[in-house]
Length: 255
Image (cartoon, rainbow, N blue to C red; front, side, top):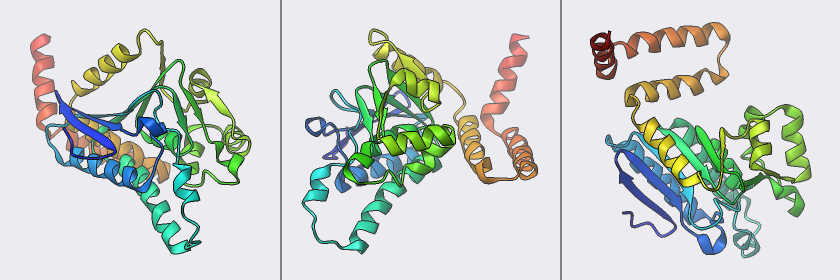
């Protein structure tokens, strides 16, 4: 178990379970929570026993976004301070993208603003059928600026701008149709479905998943030819790994 104040962290059977832990505030984000979440992800990245990371929110909601009380309490107008705080959030999203293990976000209740950004920054997003997603920042004169880069990669340009400009909250089913999440699970099957999914993912080759994730995101900004060449390099390297050698041996025994 972790000694963090605003997240929990534990490892069970190769699964690093990280939870936002401010249920009394709907897991609203502040600088301490963001910093602890980044620390927990770094711990999971450094632990060779971890095969998959499961990210959840304690209580009824995944995350309601930034804790607006922290904004109201800070009337300093200190742009340098605000930039440092914004980069903490930006750093979290980059940490998730660069994390060597696959990250699965399991969302129930609301995932709004920065919370929606964190959820959809995961490699896989599973949602309860009652979950809600959205970027309501425009309603308080704010901008979902940091998470916008993710949203534009997930959905069409028109859908992305509509979500940003209207602040509309959408259902899990609509988020699935838009391409923001991977699966919607019924309330009855939610917990079991999440556990079965992450257990199955944890059973896969750790080295292969790590190589696949790194290549998948690295080719995001590459020209086609460079991406194919990068794939060839990873293909060759993957054939030198112990997991691949064991996999081939197991396959040949079956046949």
